[in-house]
Image (tube, rainbow, N blue to C red; front, side, top):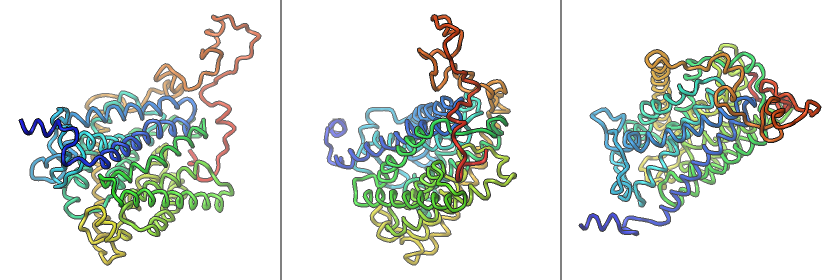
Length: 480
């Protein structure tokens, strides 16, 4: 009876209302990064005929991940260790009222939080969801939607859960002292690697799309990028699991690094291409957000500036030098996630090993003696090895999942050639923009409602509208 009373007490002794409020707010910010943030950004950055499909891949991944998360994947990521190998937790549901009202506890990591378990479940879910959403960016414009529907649950189960448990949930990298404040490795390195590998197995877009793939709505792209930036305050600020001073440090460092990265990328575009590319600036923003993520609350402000300078330049070189070589372009990574997330994520993790401070680690409730800047050069080695594990595991597991879908389930990975030619209308029976009087999409419908042949009706063509034609290539936009 006493246990029931404790669980139903509106304000149990362990509950900190400030931590609870901030954690739910931070989780909501992270959810907004996916829907609408990346959904809107992807829809604006792709060719018009792929706007709906690209945005809906995001919405599907968000919904599918949540159901997997509460039925089995949360416990795999943050529950009790499964067997003797410290790679994953025991799968199981977290759906009872008793579980959800109880105090949050990360069993294998040996920590408790001052809010209830349902808050932790949702907070960690939005991180898992955005990982699949980022991964989707490499596969836009040709992946069979049924294959995507199967891929997301499999990847969350066999790839994401292993990385999350190993680094955050108390697994072998956690016990060895790896530093990943908010997901530079768990989220960005894994999604960037998996996206590139999945794109390899999927094959390229239709040749016509690769040769002409202008953004159809730059303002929409910027709106999505703006949501992504500002809501990253919850992404990094929520990971102390408390409304703590270190949460404030993480938020400030996130914005410092991102601003520096965007500026450096824009300057490089100006120097080498003669124009400050808006698409390039968005790429620089993203690489700054990604690179500071593993370091956010560990480094001082000047460390955030250095990381931003590196994230605005090294991924720029990766994308604009290495990315233009024919051998690299054989893999059709539409949004360049291998550069913006894999390269930037590994870079950020490495730089965390250099610039993490003892004070920052202590503020995050770690006994870790900082990084090389504070005399702990061994931390750099831990960061390098941990990143290599994430890369290697995702190369292997993503390949297995793609081949399983194709050869065992017999589900084609790619759309048919006819669907690739048409785009959204063929896949979903819908189009992004209604260009006619009442939303009708063809001449037949218009004549049916009495529009005469003398009326001027623009030809929609095949997804290459005037907005695409008028958008000039500039700066670091990928040549495909």
